[in-house]
Length: 208
Image (cartoon, rainbow, N blue to C red; front, side, top):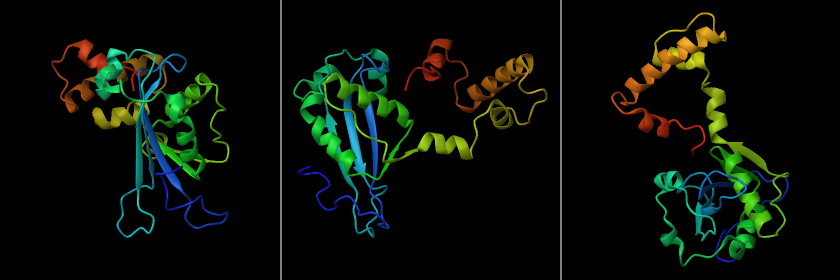
């Protein structure tokens, strides 16, 4: 792929330094079937370490969608349709993007399943084969965090209320605990006094 990752080819089998790429998508919304990617960034390497013989390289594509940008999505990423008027459609850069992933041994993201699904939907939409992630090691930083710092109701109660609670996982106990946890969160995150619509926007399980 000319102009991107020019210094290092895919490592040979058994190489000590696998090629790691990190990626993220911004989209018109969260509907995998109808929404589209409007910005995609791929970084080769984890950090910009000056002692690393293989410096970090970054490529960002902005893409013109056919789908409208949902207001909730625009509030998150700040990208408007008019910002994308001169940008290519996904199909025009699909091969370039595919080549960047083909060069990777390890693919990293945050809540990566969403981004992979949006990518695959774009390839299907433009009639191209899906990306093959079957040979890649996939690392989700969000899931890793959740594994090492669990986010169960018990964990949340300990953090935001200050103690564990009995009878966990009975419906009545969990309901009461959730109320106490939310009260503690509103204090901890300085959300006391905000209206419920504002709080709901920040806590919407269907937003990115």
